Length: 212
Image (cartoon, rainbow, N blue to C red):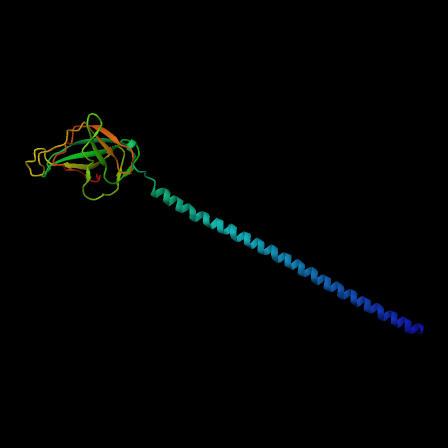
């Protein structure tokens, strides 16, 4: 091989080597860019997901707040407890078909409370034993009554006339009571008031729902 041919051969080899190195560098750069793009894409997806969840939590919070307020407002006035009330009963004049008695429950507190329905009423003897049966329901269940402080709800107790002359009784009467035992509707505790009324006759003893 002549010197000129050797130089030409070396030049061609150097050019080939340079070309291969450039291609290798280009491929490496492309791989690096692809890897960087993939990582960048994964980070963006994670951020978007976190952002959506946080946004969802922020959106849920305001909707929960009005609902909670609405529930608080709807239940703002409590049901009357037995401890909130005082009991009284007295004869009501003018009953055309027997005898009526006005049973009252008075709110003795300084806050309003709600009461609805019929009280359960029992007559007690001096020994504390129940006389006869509890008053039977008379009429509909009634509407909710808002008892403001020191106001009263009323229920009517009804029985036959003591002598039976008006056709509502047969002349037979229970023993005269010593006190009344009354469970306000919706409570499990009783109020007791000393009273000899009503004296139940003719086996008729009823109570209406509470109202103003």
